[in-house]
Length: 190
Image (tube, rainbow, N blue to C red; front, side):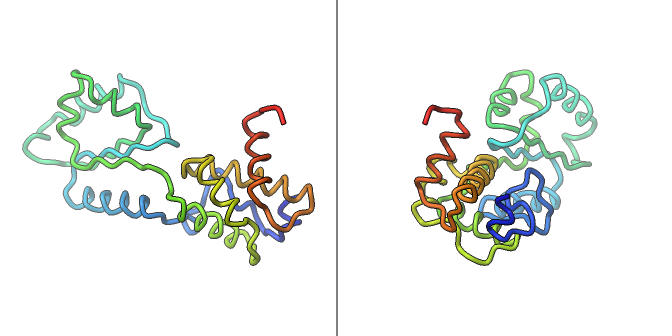
């Protein structure tokens, strides 16, 4: 319903994104730069952030054993560990000291900035066929403050805003619509 109303050819905020449609934020570029460095030097890398999940303690023990063979003298492989911020707590446990010492890069994704949230939403809508601005500046501000710049939250809230806006036949989505959409997502009383 909202796609037709806003003239979109596809969902602008899907769960899975094709590489050609991926928004290249500053953090994304920084993480890619570190991965490029890791590719050239080999070794272990650690990237953490909010929207992903990671393997159990037993796997960390297995990794330590697998990569223990001659890894102190030469790096034979690249291994990228990706997980949520609490994963760092697991890695900081004493049994994982040897594994932690092998980490060459360590980068934590913080989420998009306020300007990047606006750029991301405009980028996503444009990729979905939207040529007109839909969200107002006050809507972008509330989208940022409601999501802390995390893509999964932005996608969910922006999509709910489009649904709410289309159901009310609004060509422009302002902070009031964002607030209502946020209330609906949070399952709160209106």
